[in-house]
Image (cartoon, rainbow over all chains, first blue to last red; front, side, top):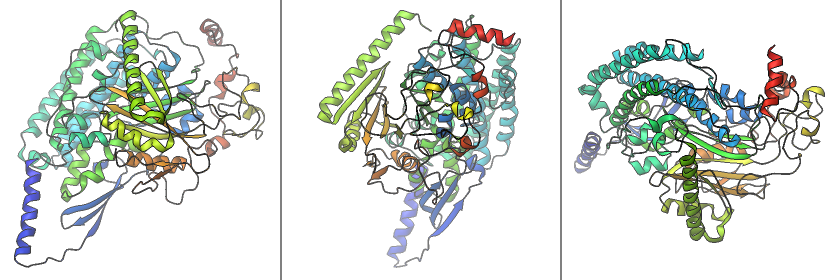
Length: 389
Length: 244
């Protein structure tokens, strides 16, 4: 916070000095267009910034370049078909998208998956969290000019993707979750390999901590940049690591009732009081490490038994409404399902985390300097598929 | 995975919390609350349209600090999945709104109401359009879904952007998808769709052209099985034969 304040104070002081000298600087606003294609946007997001010198006066966010109309499409599909669609909302952690939808449908059907299925769900949920956030913590470096971390990220993320692929058959889109359980059991030898991969991911986290956390340039570019006060963030609907970095101790894995196995594990919710870009990065790095520990515990405690509850061959969901949300890698992801009986839902409202996380950017970008736009955007960490749905 | 009994106890306890919250809301909002529903630890409250903004203000005062989402529902019956479309192409619109009762002859025994009459969900409803929003308290760890009925012809309601700035984009999305007017919204323009786009895609009478051209792809799987699949045991038997 201090650096941004210093910058603002010096800006105001220089203007005050100009006024004292009776010098009136003629400044003309210019419009800077960022995107739709920009490396910091993970897809096609466009930012139109009105600049006064180096400072942003007003920023408009234009999205919709990738809008696929999933809410309409879900109305003409059966429940098992919908998981294929929602895999593609946040494509870096596809399995985590499936879980809340399946849980909401199970809630309406009053079906509960057996314990082993819930543990394997939790396992893949955390693996997709690692696959997602390892990319972020590498990518954040490359946005700020440090090339090395992103190579490490792609190298080590590969272990996790290979694990997901070997168990589910899908590298990016597992489509593995079913109503009443999961599709398959774990393959032979998978547990030992996963433990090995988790050890490497922890090594990767340590490496990145050494590379970036103590780096003076990285600190100067992230500390005090893009500060989000907790109450502002909450009223904008920010969730996940973005709001935990503002000091809000809130994690749906711990705080929401869920049939998944998080409550059985020993883990910690990381928060940071600062609310700046550095805090968001720091929280995500800690969460990745925490997730590897959770995966280890899940593998150790994996219960035996069936992986699928008894459900009808053709899934029909009774009439009713259900809301289910989980703590996805990007934040709170939820599905509001309205069923009127029958094979497909009547209406599905998809509450995706990035949509709300990015809706704060017009507020957040006001008054920042141009290079900080990139820092702020990449520290908020969004996936365009998660905004545009 | 705790055993069954404590889990049931937990559900009961959360339902008590929803009940207490509902009573609190009713005392604060008075007769603005015109419907409510409690189901497995979740609460639905239907608010009178004129008191939509006041409901947000009261909720904010009740420590509902987190804005979760806001959207709309069009309760016009839709007749999907509708295998009859295949049997008689062109007879019924796949997204048909008013056509003859489709489910009755469709080969499925469904619990769906016959088409033509509007059936609304939890907490009731009197009109075709509803706006729904969800708020959550990160202090009390409890959430509530608010609904309000909108006019059929000119749906409009007060904006929440003053109370919850996160409603800005949600209301823009609802505006372009349903055509709801949010009175007092500072910048009510389309969010996703191009400016010249006509129609409101998420309304039930908006045709999905992909399905007009090619009716739903899952049909073949469904036709193989008899309509009596309510009993899991019975459902398993034909599935086994199918496999053999």
